[in-house]
Length: 197
Image: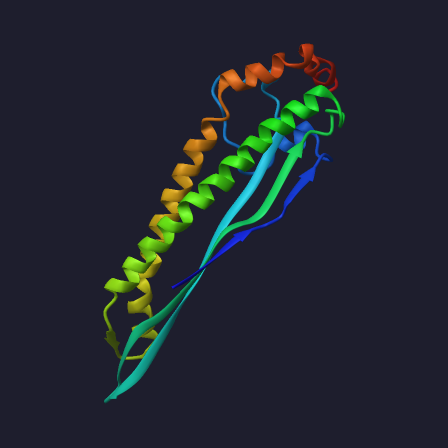
């Protein structure tokens, strides 16, 4: 099995308004959110996976085929990573730095989770491939589908587990106490900029 790790370069974008950031997909509502419930920053990180099974098939004659998995190649990781800080917060200001630091904590958590999860992903997929048995069918397509079905099911389960763990870890950063801390930081500087929204 070959597992390729993908980590897109991290981009920063300070051109989006608070209003635009609030409309971006992937935001999670946080109970008790402060800073007047404005979205001041966002770490938009998209994870993705692709896989391909190498299957060897042969004709058994009389319209029957058999096949077995030979290889599995998986690409997993983050294919897009952008940290946004609202344009209303001037670059170089104290509050801009606070919001950026908060968003970078999200990035750090994502990178750490990916490093932890890759060996788990590899081990579990190797187990699936190791348990795979040759399949027979009336066409090569039917044989391929039978061989790929357990791999597809395992990938779906692994991605769901990864997503749940990622959400739990990110929620540990986006707490009401953290939003309150940011809104009170920099001697209340945020109020100067939120008044323009």
